Image 1: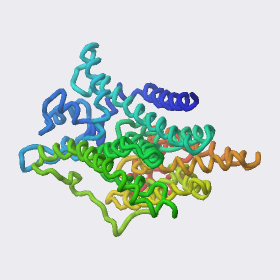
Image 2: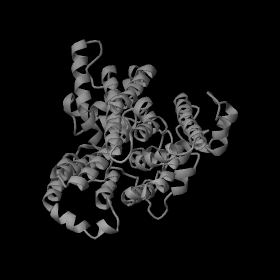
Image 3: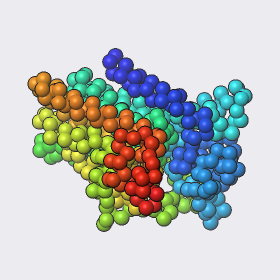
Image 4: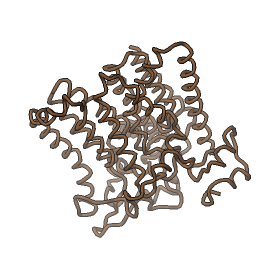
Length: 444
């Protein structure tokens, strides 16, 4: 019951922010990347224009999806069609909310049923909050297998409000990361269930999950490492392949399930470009020989540990995982390290306009385990240690709320922050020209 109440509180908080800021009323919900993720729905169910997406050009002057860039993320193909570079997965999760918004808009009659009037935008906001909250529900059930109620619930609240997942679940909805957060929480839950019970249904559902992860962000399928490495210790590693062999039927069904889900994206590529496999991010890619790991973690521009210090605290928790649970560390830690390397090898390692490092949000679910372990240790300490730790965590939460508010106000800009600018505006709710001069040259 306490887990349900906690998740409902998280969801209600997200929804309160959504209604309070009211961006959905002002046509400020679906723009830039988010307009690309969502475009599949009106293209399929309203305009019957999945091949050209021409309706975006006609609606852009009204809704300002991408400002003056009418064809942002859309590329002409030799087939005569136009390719949407964004994957179809987000639209899959938004579909039931889109249908509700479409039906209500038609019934209520105040706004045009064009796929972008206020009720559509409101429902997309609510879809993000819902799937994010569902991620916390799944994550809570997973953590309760290993930790008591207090560290489990504390971990959920810290991740919900002490990280930039809070911002992307309430202030800036429609991005891929809250949806991926939900899926990665499901990967943890089902992987653990599979190893504990050997149920075929668990591994088949894992296959479906990996198909969905591919539909949203292909790089996220690196969490295949989790079921491959789960419960890795000297006792288990010798029998790992025996376990896989015994599960061969389930694994085969999982592969089929994952490919079946992936076929949705592959079919779109085939229809538009004529090829089953198509690299849609033209002019962008990975540079694995020159990753920006230190920038990605510690820079004032977008550093993960600068804008989400709770992530650094959670990493410290790996040193406090009880020995009886240490067998899960290789899967979690190795996956996180590989994710850090891959994410910050992207050519645009700062990931455009964003609050902090948005590309690592989905991997917060993996950090929940060491964070819960650390909180468990803190709870068992003397009152002075508990007080100091509580102060630190309250400060982390306060920093998250404050910087989220600053970003919403524009005091923390979408990019080009320097160390000097960061500290100059640290306590401000507005910047001046002297502050602006401290930004990187491109942002002045």
